[in-house]
Image (cartoon, rainbow, N blue to C red; front, side, top):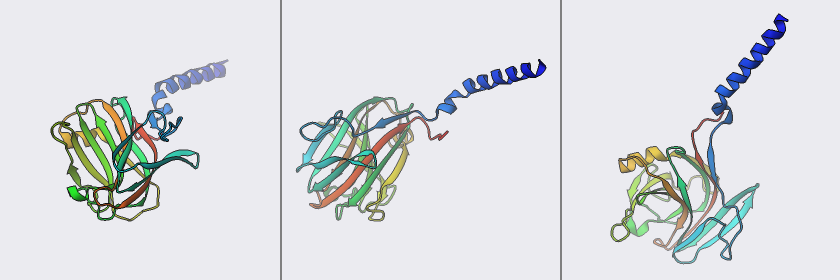
Length: 227
């Protein structure tokens, strides 16, 4: 009888500890941003908006290894796909994504207005008209920060961070993770407001060249815990 009581006690204790540590058992909370969904007549997936700034947008939504990806090619063009969001970045401070660049715009350099082209950009927009742009640049050094703010009449504050530079690793899928709350505070010297949208973009209109890239799934994560 005593053995049975001990078994019951340990069973109850185990159940209690399981509940106590349930958040750890569940793992990381995440928001997955896909390119899935029905395509419209322009080939744009549901929930996304095509923005053409210069030239003609050339893109496809493809399936690779059971993942839906976006393929962009820019021929002296500038275009993007963007998705509206309404997310508290403090609950999901980590942004994770994958991209694969096949061709960089020759001579591109985010530090020079007349050569400011990139094969791969990921932009996040916050309430208050503030934007962070993560880029793979042809020339600008890794970690360099540029101010691309647009004054009147748009009044956008845009900060660009070079997360990859140069031709090394062309043709490879590369993964990146950024703490967007810390990036925002470092760039704008204040706490971030709501995350209002996300955009993938390609540019080669300034250098009059060709750029080519793939974009994979994008994640917003509550933490970097893996268990």
